Image (cartoon, rainbow, N blue to C red; front, side, top):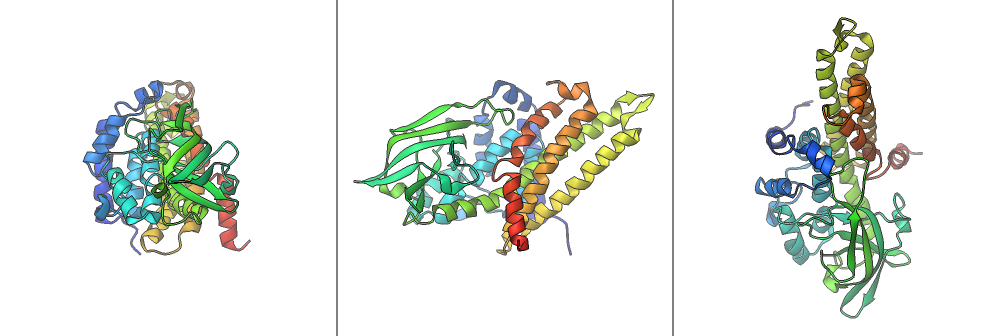
Length: 379
């Protein structure tokens, strides 16, 4: 049994680590403070062929596979989780529904510019009254002459309002028991963007409410040939997304461990470094052990995905373990830093603490993951 990363994954991880250190790390705190989406970073990602990692070369991507993708995501997430989260949304829920379910013409029209980094992708599932329960979606798509009319509201939607946004892929109800995915390009009449939301964490990421009021879309903006399988499409997309959020969580947890270890080795209390005190050593040991465990289940889920084997159970386990680790590790990082950890600026752990919580919420809450896991166990 070989636990080493494949060469392709190592090379991609090295590329992303070097890029993040150069282009993201010096500015991450400023973007967070100013709540500014770093569009220039995503344009450069496109130039480096990093915007189509899960898309085949036929449509302009590189199709590196889930293992290499998870390794790359962890590296960027260890530098700035908000930038990595926006990148993740583009690569998974903002692109994969088109790849999985779009017609050939739709793939060439929308997927290719996403893969090349000319456009930024996003997806609109969540609504004011529908989060974990997608079947409660109230946004409706009605067949009209020449296409579809969308009516409804979406909330907490990523990547919809930047200057390079393609426009979201919208999950809408077409009948009592039928759903479809619709591409709603930016600037479509009847499609209104709400203001960028004031979030606790991930502050530089574009997150908005979307309002569809008599929004008319051409008939070919429905992904695929029919409107039957929208919920299934969403479920399949979210499964790979859980591997992605696990990788985001690994990056944040690793950043917490690295920052805490560096501080504990330097900070002197009671005449010796913090790292020599058992209370602190045990915190660091627990963080390191849980990080290794979460990485193993994440990579197993990614490996299963790449082999075409069932992976949803492992993806749920990975997302649960890694996201809860990120929250715990960020809390311990603040504790180890003491008052310095509570202050924004000199040390990054306050930002890590703010960023961590959403990892237990997005792409299915911890409670949803436990439901999936328990069902897979046979109960």
